[in-house]
Image 1 (cartoon, rainbow, N blue to C red):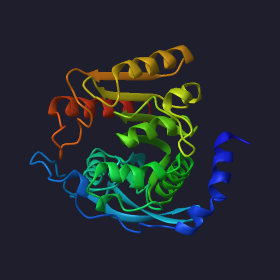
Image 2: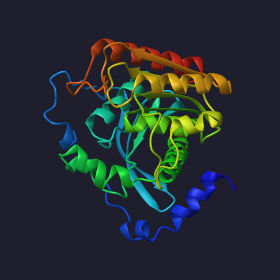
Image 3: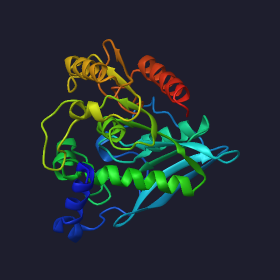
Length: 288
């Protein structure tokens, strides 16, 4: 039995989770309350030529909502799992899915907090972290992402060509998923935490899983990110090199956390646009 299988069994035995069930059954409209006011720089991608909207993804204990965007014509398109920021699947994450669909991908973002609560309705970030984000088990997230990939494969996507990208909270998950799924072709992690204090529900961080990486990962980080020191990026880089893993880091000078979040003051157009180009090249290079 793998450690992940053990985690899943533990998750299934969780009486608290069983009692709680699903707190969220549909996605929020617009932006999460904690991200407002929304910047005038926010990018809106149209749905022309796309099949885009909310879907329900079957998971081991029910269904979770997700936002899916794919080209109307052609296919099957490679599947990209899009992992939310700490704010859940709100308008920015939906727009990322549409941007990916516009360049030929089947992009899908599952609401990974569906059992724990509605992140979009909480205006205080610290309350959001304490009441929802900290209560989401990594094992549950990895299982839900597997289920989402399977759903995409049954919905016109080519799940044999599977990639993942994620932002902030989701950036960390990209690293974990790359250590979990042997079928993953490539990942792109945007400013995801690499080193941290383990908890019962989040027992390992990316630095602990370097030897287990099963797919190439591109990490996009900001040198002025106060929550992710550059020395932890270099620590991860050296560990990956020592383990013989295909990992590449780009650290943008004078750039803060969440530099791709065009709806927030942290947005930095130059690094965001460069990162988007690098994402596309990384996926193409690795068969997506």
